[in-house]
Length: 114
Figure 1 (cartoon, rainbow, N blue to C red):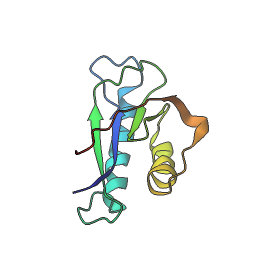
Figure 2: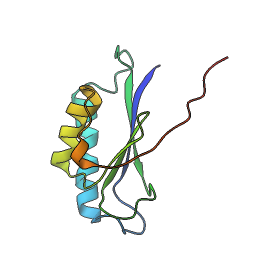
Figure 3: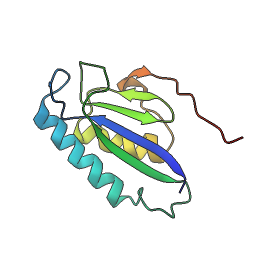
C-alpha cells in the first residue's frame, strides 16, 4: 500500500495549551468524515492512501488545532472544521497549499530502499 499523505492533527491535547478541546474534537470529526467520504483511505486509490492520526501534541503550543501534513512538512494553524475541509480538498487532493494558514514548514528525511 502506497501512502500519499499522513495527516496529523493535534486536536484534543492532554494539556490544552494550543486550542479549545471542543473545537479540536469537532475538527477531528470533520477530518475523519472527509477522508472517508472522499475515498482517500481506499487501499486501491491510485494516488495512494491518506492516513490520519489524532496527535496529543505537535509541539506548537499556540494557535491550534494544528495540522501537520506529511510528507510536505506543512503545518497549518487555527484549523477549524471549515478550514480542514478546504485544506483537504485544495492541498491534499488538489496539491495546492493554502499559504495564509501555514504557520511552519518542517523538513523530513525520507528513507529510501537500497
